[in-house]
Image 1 (cartoon, rainbow, N blue to C red):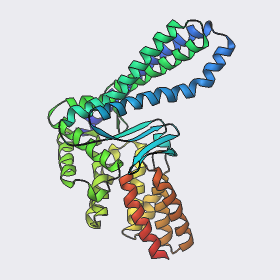
Image 2: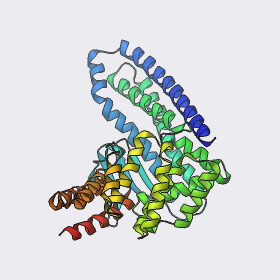
Image 3: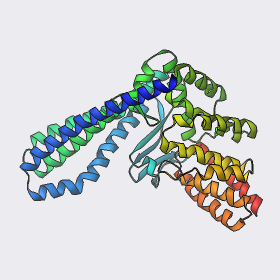
Image 4: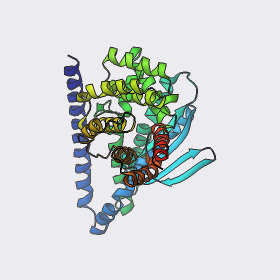
Length: 369
């Protein structure tokens, strides 16, 4: 019965997304065709050349909306990513880095809640900041474009307006698809009240804490247990991923047997995870059995099921390879993979998992030297 409900919800999300995409696509195509008919070849070429920069400008404005909303509700602004550009707030202030993580190349903002008061509404405002910024930018650039008629600048402004309205529509519609929730879906869940709202709050706190650099063993186990209980009660699609957090928490705390149990629970529910994300489960299992259990047969079995994917951090892949080489007594190959993994750890989205992984690699290196 639960599987049928999940499939029905997934189908509804796909239909809504398809209809919204078709509507926005039709609008963009119609307006684009009308504009192109009255433009010179130079203007069209300019539009093509500036399309990518305009797209990133639209994304930058969207993410800035999230950041501003976060600051207004007293969240701590920690990270701002747009395409290849990344700004991160550390102990000494803001620093710029090149973003080498393809998973965040579309754009991302990380703001952490300060205090627990009125979190439901504060998270809702934070989530709404991005779509609202996109809507405002679309309106402003459209008005400017119509005021500057028959010019190359007005054409570029119109492209920016269309990109912004497309971002607004794509993010404001309440959707949960492929393990991800839209801004509108987040707001819907938070404002639903009852268990659904409590679960969404707990989930956000767990994810954002880990992303901000709180290592697994330092996460609040009671909140995680409550999230698991509620996920079962409301049949939350994201509930399956809580097994992963519990696996990491118990392993980082030194309880290998409990970590194995949570990992097996994760594997048992793998059919409810989108195919692309299933690879993360196989990789977690391969690394755990190679590093913690030193079981080459099981580690190889899971490793052979793993296929590299865009969402999988390279650091975890290299760490797994290093552990497998160590089990095979291939010391030099293992040390090489450890070095490659360490280089990639700063590119991980989940900084908390990265801290724990760094410690494991240091321990593995000490065993080999």
